[in-house]
Length: 394
Image (cartoon, rainbow, N blue to C red; front, side, top):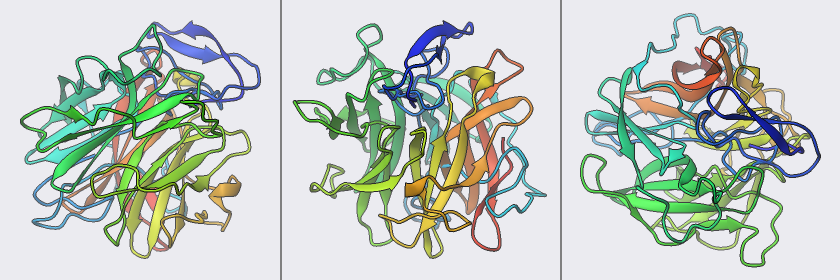
């Protein structure tokens, strides 16, 4: 995530970077607290927007659609409103709960969950991209990383922390899992999005595609966006897309071909904010609408984070997306889904897991009772009568 101010110091025992002031460089909140840094309300980070996470199961569904027996893997995301326990339409989630999690659930930033067989896989920002697993969605254990070291083509990560990769998301299509991730450094929009594939999450290993899917401000190009926080999506017509972006000119959308590579020069604008503090797009289709979730404001400041999740919807994948009041996200609109409350602050970089027809809001939040360390949070999610997400978070 980024803002219009450079970072100045590092705080918390988990090496959380704080931002000071200035007016330029958008930064990213892709760095998990405890791992290399963070961003502030609108502070640009060439990194991920506090970053993100996908799934496959014998009864999964695509991008937030209810699972269908024999269908494609189930995938992850987030939605619903937090602090007041209400969604965009204000309906209280009377019977919704936040799951009681245990095990390896701290130092989790930008989570995304995918299910393969009887196992849930959690991907998050970290050294070589962190991986965790669970059999019940509640008890988690570490499972190493995607890469032992960054792929050799990457030149955009920080020299002091070259293997730190942000905001991974996984989707299953074309007979294999596709992993998209960010390669950048805090405070810069000289960034690249990488792409790796794997046929099964329970065996074999990830194969990086050997070059960048998309870069910003590389090779002499001048771009007003930041190529981080990639979120792949398959629309109702079976066409593939990739949403991405952090700060600068906001969230973008490009087409992908059947192999998961960029398809053509089209670049659609999805959302902006007056303070430029918007990142971590996540797309979901339900009913007649495509829903665009976004994380806004200040991430990566531990218990002081003002990060929150907003949503808009459209009948077209490329927009325009509007909130419950009819305001356009491209003009700074957005309906509240999650915001900090009590112990849990700055909930964001959400994804949505649809498993056996149930919706779960997946995100990270900073623990005010635990030195501001980012934790994995999974909340049950439902929908209001007028079709807006309602979450049990934070």
